[in-house]
Image (cartoon, rainbow, N blue to C red):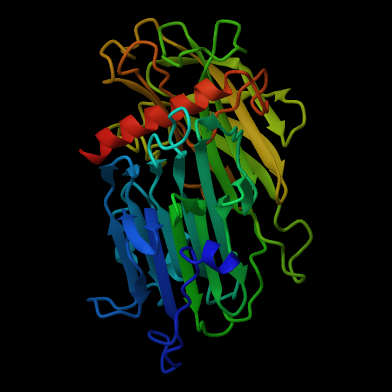
Length: 485
């Protein structure tokens, strides 16, 4: 069963091609895709897939990996209905030889420090999927799921031998047979849900795992479902990414695991009633509505090498830089910081013009860099390995805001950057609230599962079924529109 379950998301390890020179001794492979489905052993869907990219290769610069795949829509009910975003995989086996991957940075910039390293960075597109449409009792879909993509990253500094292996993914909404499954935030690797004796779902699948040995390898799948339906075995994968570096020269083949934190974040947004506690239903923004924005920052550092200094994986000063959405006003007194599941505490923040050097990608057609926009900066304190900080604040929709004056044409889009004093600025996390295409339809999307209740990390509410189904319907419609642009 295990070999079948993890077969599609298995790691592809590069073959050793010899050690003749620095340019061709090492090998790299990467792949990223939005959705795949096999049914009865035959491939049915393979969407937004970069395919396996390798280096060295026969391109103009054989040392570089640079594969991309556009987003797409596949309406094929009653079997499946899929909307995906673009996927991309990049890498270098000759430090300093692949500058084309960094200029121009584009909407998904790479950390510039990677220019001097061996690396592979794969990022799978988001996926909004309805599987076996209307074939569960009710009638309901057998499975509805929304993912915000996944990332697999490996790198090594040839000067120090320090190695990084990072895997991350996010599932925003999951509905099984018409029953919503609450996902209040990040889930642990290989979280398993058994839906029946013949069906299994794995969230944030990292198997055989993200490992640091002489080969650096990582495979992450946001959601992997396998089972038997109508007598046929199905295997469904959402947002899967792979990154592998092998045959690295010294000291990268034996160097220490990174002695540094690895910060990753997701962004949630929930429209509230005037009490600033109860989620509004439906989640349609209107003038005067308070919206709680929550940024969850997790330190995903690997277990440190014994040679690492004490507390080397702790981020001593975590800072959240939120570009305030257009059409809302932030209440500075509402800022809170919460560590794991501890009670949240009030915090202060600074509102000023955004730094022109910062790029807040993810809110197209808004410019990624705009020094005329306002940014909220909040210091969240230190963050040790495996722990999470939740930074939240409330903003009110302005009376003059154009939000939802024309159905479906406006939205509130929010992006945030996360920075530690000893870590580079993270890739932007985004949350989006769309206007409803019709009355009484909930439209909320985000970079993570919405947090409901009186606090940002509240675990449950009777509004979960409405909110989760609304997230799925909203993302499916929005991504369908986006894929056609």
